[in-house]
Picture 1: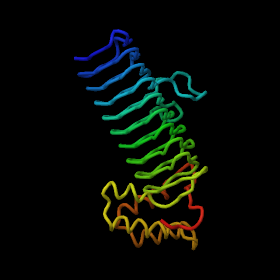
Picture 2 (picture 1 turned 90 degrees about the vertical axis):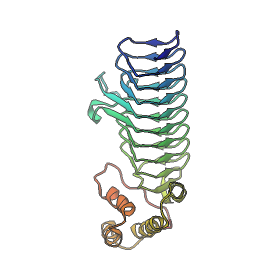
Picture 3 (picture 1 turned 30 degrees about the vertical axis):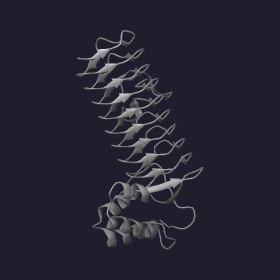
Picture 4 (picture 1 turned 120 degrees about the vertical axis):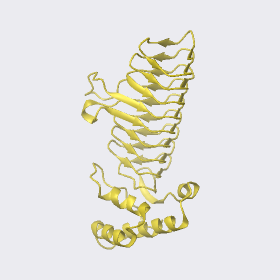
Length: 266
């Protein structure tokens, strides 16, 4: 049975799962679906065609599913889907997609979106992504599983952040960040691999050793990038973590790859 505070406004057409808790002064729109055990702590707005997965908690003054900040948006019934076990902290803003961007914004399972962070229209976040306080994603950004955005960081539209990557605090990201990469700086530069994250998540010594060797080859000064990609593929083609980077670089993309500023040390 759901628990709805008497000061909350819940549209009767909203779909509520089992044991949903809606706290004081929340508003829930008619096209909203809240999964089992979802909790809106207080002063939360959930609007639009929005689906929130089971066990997700949304904290005060977060706004979820309000129209995207895109002047081309004309009220189309675009969607926002949020996975299971997500934590959305105070003052976070999450917007649905746009017709021109595929019509869907996605937040995967187990994500942590801290205070004041922003997920713009048509973004796609994988599972267990962490956005630290006031991290900002422009429209159409793709973020891989287990990636982490530092506080006050900002990501340009259409950028890709690879899985297990780390973006340092106060970093402006204009180019794609390779999987397992670490970027930092006023304008992001590749600073090596996210070695701390790799160790914490249980990657083997062989995997980390191969990643470091492949990284040095990929970002060496000799030859073209295409030649270096071929060399890395020949040497590490059976190492899936290395091929994650190779395939990421070879994929079609709207933005350039973040490069190291000086040297290729990982």
